[in-house]
Image 1 (cartoon, rainbow over the protein chains, first blue to last red):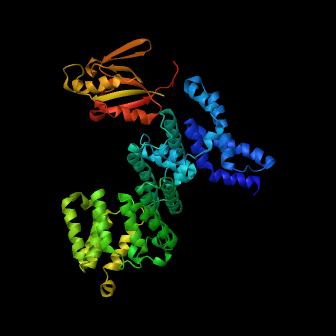
Image 2 (cartoon, each protein chain N blue to C red):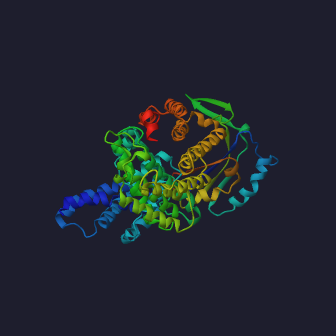
Image 3 (tube, rainbow over the protein chains, first blue to last red):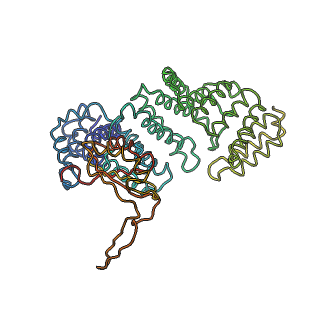
Length: 415
Length: 114
């Protein structure tokens, strides 16, 4: 590999680790980024002449750290902690090389002292290595707005002394939850792809999978971290089947299961098995179990709906939510009978009158009514769902199509 | 690093001995103030005692009350020396105001030396 190619490769693959290590050392992510750019420039000057170093990441880390310390020296005394700076300058450089600080970086980026939007942007920029432009497009905000958000977040990190550290064991559950929450949000944004340039948003699924894999690898003793990785991968395994050639969403029972990614399903199942061995269930593990059951079932009808209904029951106990209960109603509708599912949905409706204005309630009831053979009521439920569905995205087109297919005479005959 | 720890409570609360909420918060503050890395502890009279001043074009504008009418009032503060934000958060989480009001943590600009 030539020097230029080596630098380009290192800039991509070593960026997060170098940033993490330098930022952890000096407590300043913004400065670490500038220093990394400086180190790349130095590489451009030196590598072609002296050859590519044996460990490019280590080389970049040492050079970036020196650049960061030089910059700190130039700053006004008011902003610099002299004693800490002297300690950094005296510290042996080799100490900053092991082990890489990606986990510490992730905990800093996902600190609740930052706004959630900022946590997400910062994680994607620094840990996942997306560009500002890519993140801006994925979240449908103007690039200058996102750049501003990143700078503000980096300054907050530095000025308020948010630590680049793995939290103490007693704070781990709360802090890990924040990290997993950010990754989950990246994933649901990509997965939903309700608006905007779908291509970029689908990339968010890749990033969520990458981040989830990193966390699972770095924290192999945390079952929910493993569970989230399993969840993201099991969902992602079905990506190719979820949208047809025209970009229209294909519902679960109509998906071509030969398009599912078997390797990803196996990886998800393996992660889930490892998580479950800890016997400490949590919401991500339960959702992963549901996703794995769906992904590995030969057909929609041949799915273990009884188990899925039970898992939704467990999920509702862990994180009570009307959406979980609606999914549970649909699963009961498959596991027992459409009437049983409807009974569950209607009981939920009675308990939560606010759900009347929620399109998913009516969409779920519509599907159950179709299967109960009550087609007129189903058509009415589809209409209510349609009236309440968001105007952007494909939800309306999907509902219209389901209504037409499911409440027509041909469908009745097929059933 | 050094942090200002600002204690905010409901603006209706009275400060000083005899006021029930103020009395309730005292044991926490006695213990907190005794810690070696905690300094500049001050309790303020309640907002009714506040006077605000502005000088514009050489003219003094003096008004009764705090500068901003908010639902919460500042009624005390500390300076805490800590290695990072997490340490401060852990420490002040035990204070009465964390449970009954809001604690704002602001890093001081000059880190160590005076």
